[in-house]
Image 1: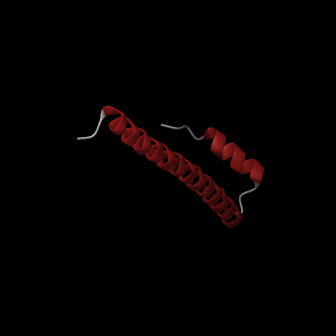
Image 2: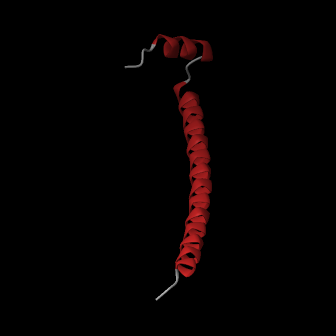
Length: 68
């Protein structure tokens, strides 16, 4: 049977392992978010280039659009 101090040490090691995994996942989330934002930005640029709408008209069109 393990002593309480051995159980505590095992739980602390497990906690540290989970904290490291959490940090890794946070970094991956940040990286994915940046990639998504970049792709969205590029997609918007591509759509604008394809549409041939003058910028001023686009701004006016977007400003007149109401979000639900």
